[in-house]
Length: 108
Image 1: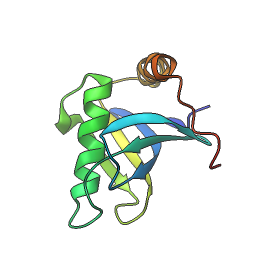
Image 2: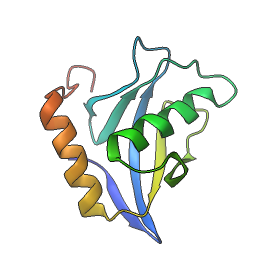
Image 3: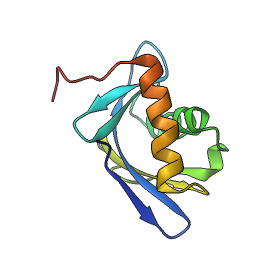
Image 4: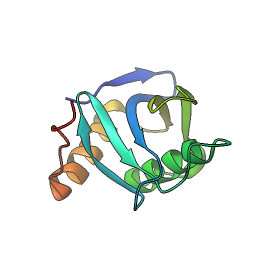
C-alpha cells in the first residue's frame, strides 16, 4: 500500500528515487514508497527535477504541480502533488502499476 496523505491543496506521496538509471519511469513499489527511476545524476537538484517530471507525466498533471518537499539530498523523498485528491492519485498510480506489474519487492 502506498504512503499517501492529504495536505492542503493536494497530496503527499513517499517516493524512492533511483538516479542514474537506464530510463525515466515509475518502476513499482518499494515497501510503501513509489519507486521512480531517473536517468539524471543526483547532483545540483537534477535528479529531484527528473523525479518531479516523471511523476507529473505519469499522473497527467503539469510539472509545476509536483514538488519534492522533503529528502532533497536523499533517495527517500516526499513529493507534494497539487490539484488532485488522495483517491485520484491512488487510482492513477494503481492503473500505472497494474499495467507495468512491476512491484519491486526484492529489495525491501
